[in-house]
Image 1 (cartoon, rainbow, N blue to C red):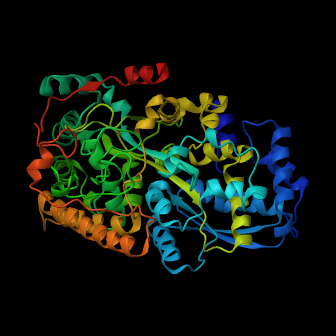
Image 2: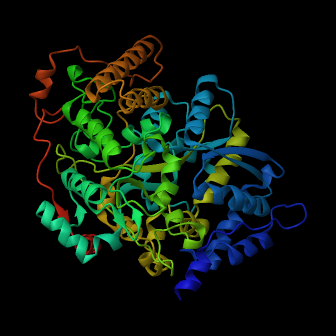
Image 3: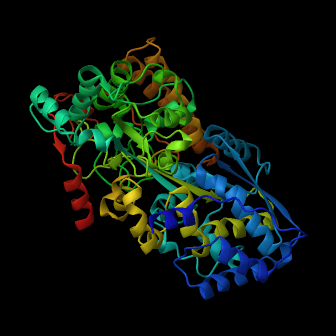
Amino acid sequence: MRHKLMAAVATVTLSAWAGQASADIAAAERWIDEEFQPSTLTREEQLAEMEWFIQAAEEFQGMEINVLSETIPTHTYESEVLAEAFFEITGIRVNHQLLGEGEVVQAVQTQMQTGRNLYDAYVNDSDLIGTHSRLQLAVNLTDWMAGEGADYTLPTLDLDDFMGISFTTGPDGDIYQIPDQQFANLYWFRYDWFQREDLQEQFREIYGYDLGVPVNWSAYEDIADFFTNHVQEIDGVRVYGHMDYGKRAPDLGWRMTDAWLSMAGAGSQGLPNGIPVDEWGIRMEEGTCNPVGASVSRGGATNGPAAVYAIRKWDEWLRAYAPPGAASYDFYQSLPALSQGNVAQQIFWYTAFTADMVAPREEGNNTVDEDGNPLWRMAPSPQGPYWEDGMKLGYQDAGSWTLFESTPLDRRQAAWLYAQFTVSRTVSLRKTHVGLTPIRDSDIRHESFTERAPFLGGLVEFYRSPDRVMWTPTGVNVPDYPKLAQLWWQNIGDVNSGAFTAQEAMDRLAGEMDQVMARMQQADEQADVYGGCGPRLNEEQDPEFWLSQPGSPKPMVDEDPPGITIPYDELVQRWQEG
């Protein structure tokens, strides 16, 4: 049964059928029968959705539209399979281009700044929700679905079924983006090594507690030290207790803004993001839409003790416990390095890598056994010493379809049809099995994922757990994501290079963030650029004033509490029991 199921959900690139495509229910039936299975809909319900797309697309016959997304397996499937299916069924040709995440952000920023229509739609991270809701250059989809997009909005879109719809909702309560894929940063570890009795006994003798899933950063560091410096070799292979990346590139910045500081506990309590201080360290008082600062001297936490601790630990662990060369890896290089099978754990691992990490051994993946069963598991992210109950515990990417006002109306409407096609219930379950980046609650609870769960290392259990809400994207405190995000990787890179200490780098970063927000404040006050929701910076005060107040920014605490672990099976049981 297992091999039959795996064959059914393997990524398939279908060759195009010969001849000029036009709106065609026969093509829809063929795609439904040969590709779009399994589905949470019946075949009749799938056909009804496809009939709606055919009718809605009639006036766009022969149009060619251009869309852009980053390069991950889910979007490769869309580009190579779903775009062709959409063309066959509706007659609208889609050029679905794939670029690196940094290039996608740059294209989005260029289209916003120039008003030139570079692409007709983007899969743009919901991290920009604070930007889109303020600048009003992205289409307000709540208004769109009731207005110019009403006749082109799928009646069965079912917004409440999207797990990440809150991530794409602005402070005004309106929706600006529709989730297309989601993945979280979780803890990854070699379950087979952790289960070995000889290693369990050795760990207990050295550290005085059981080897298991680390609950806090102290335990993670102990485990990293154990495998790197004490175990050293397993089955003739040099092993290490930690993996990360540190290349001086834009994704190094996202490595930190993607909740690394909040995992340490830098922000405030509150979901989906800290109130009033978020994971970037930006303060925005509850009930307002105006950020007031990133520096501790203005009530922020970007250069506070918790943030500095987080950056220092990242740098220390990368130097002390990771394989040689890890400091020069970027986001995309860290996956194949992990699949070599010589790393015991990774504290900041993206579930977007799951599809590749369940690839067979003959494809070079040394983290599955001969039968394709994963030798690893995923688990919740360990908590830093500043973390408190009620805080977010990690990051969840929600790449989301985004339209811009600068796109001509007819092209925007046609692109909206394609965007909905890729997330429709006819398509979404199959796409989820391919890319393993679930967006719909109904999909992850489908019986096909119940059958597949044992082979996905905890992915299904995580997304079925109520704990999934503790992993969230960047929120509304960040007023202009592209302008502020580019400051991070350059400053963090100076820590990795040894040019600055963690404190010096974070002081400089916080200061630069405040400078950028000051210019935004001036622009907003002069020309209403941000709809009155631009920054309104607090006057600087002695940092001790803010550090002595309740909540974030937080004063320095004991950075080395005792290590705490939990058995993986007990953790899964908690997830399943809710």
